[in-house]
Image 1 (tube, rainbow, N blue to C red):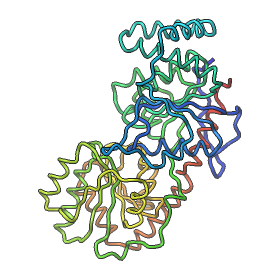
Image 2: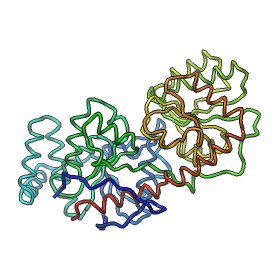
Image 3: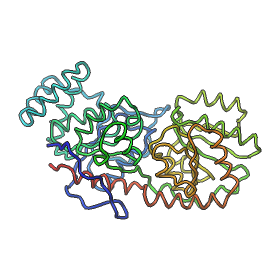
Image 4: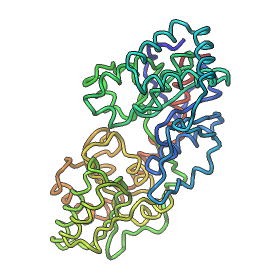
Length: 424
């Protein structure tokens, strides 16, 4: 039976963040809304790392999310796990009745309680419940012994129901938008009560969940996202001596990323006589507005919108960069900043969310207030003017990521949490 209580938050002290497991995690099913997705490579990297650790995975995704050219991440080819798309998955009425009878016979009280929950909501909710019953029967017969989801997603809702109908331990990872939305309190409390354990990506998020949503901190485990330091590493050819130093930003072109403040900061630096280039890698709905700002500020040839790029292009850009900038209005914990730091590139980021847990001010980079183009310009200028400080910050940045923000450490902590859960 799924526990509605939580074990103590996990703290690992080994070099890879892995502790002895209390339960063998053999088969894990992930429920995701948009996968594969070019915009969320951290989920694919998490899955690939778990597979390297010998975990058998299966993925249920609502639908894929390719880039504007219909392409998927090239790294997807390395994933062994089968992917089933939920929006295309249909069960015959006879299968639904068989599944209902099967689940009722095994877990009558729990099944009736959840059936009433969805029946009262009606409409599409009843369809979710019927689909979940069929999946519950399938996954329990397959011997799945862990379910995990990311975000407060539609797929995660189905995962919650599957877990409640089977007793398979269920965990999920909370990131940003679903935590910072005040309207999500009811759904957050509902999911947290149903889960064996709750994971989030920063201490800031853990505090926020307690203070704004009433979810006790001791019920939430902090597992930082991680990167692969063997891929995002140092490059022998550094761009510090370039006549026009390169500043790089990797972010979706969305309002939450505050990219208009980076454009304004670049305009200020250009007026002050700085020679540099700024490459923004990413795509999104803010492209037309950003293009207008760049044209209005006469920043052609200075600021370039590079579009969505592969991990290899991101790495090559970071190897050429002298500085990484992320001016987000809100940010739980930025994986793109980790990637830059792992490449030895100092960062200038806004002091929002959990970013101070990653970028130590005046050691790994500089923290600035959000929505302040002036402060952003001053911080960028400080590091453009001081190659020695950049080198010192860059070395400390890489050391920070290698010690606290690797995929191996992340996978080890997840495996430990699952191993301490209610076994099957």
